[in-house]
Amino acid sequence: AEGTTVDDKVVAVWYDQTNNKLMYSYNETPTTSITGGNTTASGWVTAKAVFGGLSGHENAGEYCQLTVDKNGGIHIAGYDPSNCDLVYAYLSAYNSDTFNTCVVDASGVVGSNITIDVALNSSGKAIPYIGYYATSCARPKCAYLVGTSAYTDGGANADDEYTGKWECAVLPSASKINMQSNQYNK
Image (cartoon, rainbow, N blue to C red; front, side):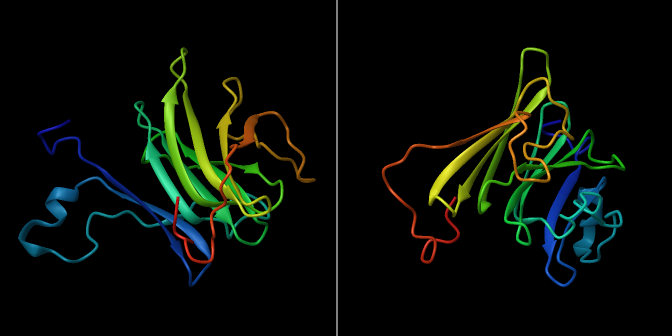
């Protein structure tokens, strides 16, 4: 709640380059963990791999972005450098044990320079909207979960074919981004 520390929680994702995994952790007492200049990692739960259960995509997570929906759900998008795919993970709450994961887009080299936002549909379901770059066509793309789909429904199958569970589209643009000099642009 704004103006109080009673409900404050902190969630974090980072790409562990030593183990090539996207990691997730949270802290339920962020304000008490820093009292008195405490610089230890107290209050943080043991980190876990986000895409560890997504077969063939365990090393995904570069360019990761995270957002929290109005219902407290955690939405994470990342790039899989091994397969050149855009991947997604969902937790129903910050302290849930299991990530719901899927491949959103696997058409060409896609998924870098990510942005993510969430909107509730008329049923109150959080629908993730992911902006990302498609190197293979040198254009930005946007993907969103089709309202009736589950968070585990992939937008692409094992043969890199679209499933219709996610709507993925190239955004029309007359200009191209020079990724060599602007590699951190979103």
